[in-house]
Length: 118
Image 1 (cartoon, rainbow, N blue to C red):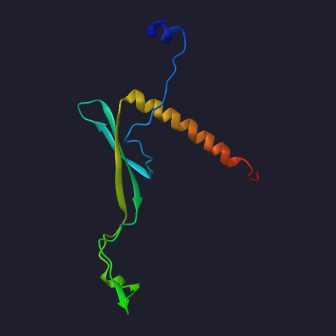
Image 2 (image 1 turned 180 degrees about the vertical axis):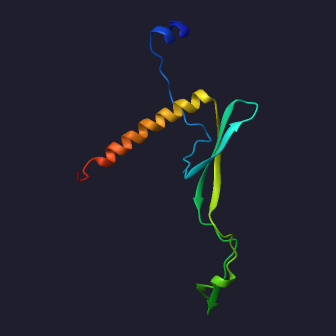
């Protein structure tokens, strides 16, 4: 059967394959907007954490590492947002993803209601 005809009247099977760059990304938030000139939506996703110190200093007594001297810790303050990846998509793809997320949110909300007192 011709693939164009199959799309109109039949079924089309999709197979998923993980690329060599596949990884799981934890997302705490997103930042972005409409890309000027391209008509696409740009969404950079990030995870949040406390900053990892640049350096720390511990006391050493008789060759045994002791407690950290917090006054000598060198670290950034605040919250560190690590931008994991940048997603660029058409408006049509954004709508499909939004609808998919809406459905998953409803599923999760329903699952959380199971077993809870009314």
